[in-house]
Image: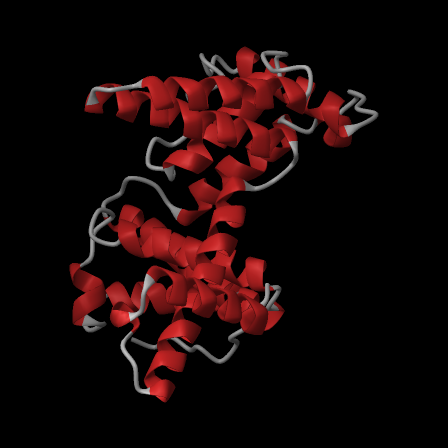
Length: 259
């Protein structure tokens, strides 16, 4: 087709590669994809970016950001083929939004600190006719992250506990209500309230709830894998150990694996 892909550092090269993959003589798999068929890929790539950040692996982060960028360009290419919008429209949209929402940088407004920036954002969103301050949150977010994001947004307009002590008191109240629930549907409801309150505590303490839970999951994975490996080396089955013996092995795993 006459394209040259000699400058891998160029954004235009990436755009041209994606267009070629989607062309009639391109890749059969890429040609078959739609916005819906690859939305899971987009989410997966975003999570791999988060994993690289959690690990502090900058080389991996660089690679995963490239994979995520590829997904964005691929969606834009599909939209261009369907004459819905062009990649330039995507870039124009975010550039216009950034300039509009940062009048303290690109205009005459003032913002002395981050809190004033947030207050200005909420005012600008209302002027844009965005409706509820919660309406922009995607419902497909993980539920815990969604809870924390909602809490952050409503706190911007003052709907929040004064301090973390008040939320912890609420947590104790929710634990009591969960303990008293007898019917399953009530337990489900109260358990949801319990998790929502934990999300609020995390937000008040500036803890990223998803990152904290991913860290806990990773520690459990590594420690349990250690237990399995030890059992294989010792020629025993983990399932045949008594609860007390499993606890001893778990403590050993915690000492060996650490954080």
